[in-house]
Length: 109
Image (cartoon, rainbow, N blue to C red; front, side, top):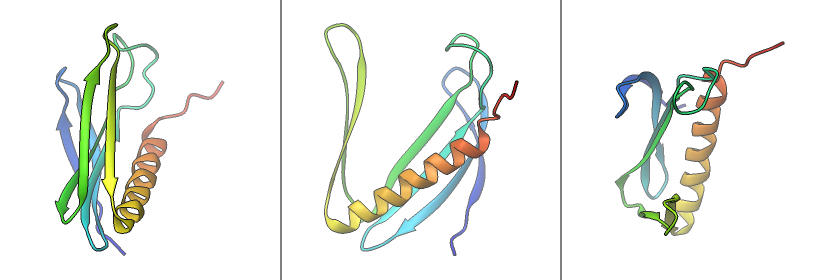
């Protein structure tokens, strides 16, 4: 079993969200944190906010790049090396997806 920590984050726009974090252990160690306000009925001007972070806590061959094309579209690329990194990133992404699913506040007609 692993410990899940509840945190509060203030995003760059001032929005406060509850996040959940855990560590993932293999030959490397990752920490992962995610949270969302859930659906709020709009685009970035009126809609929800979502946050996630993946951090090397030791021994992870992890690189990331944020870039912008000539039209101003941004992208985030993540590069990992090693078999343990494959396992820990799969676990991290599953955790992120579970947190966001649990917090999204489905709207039912």
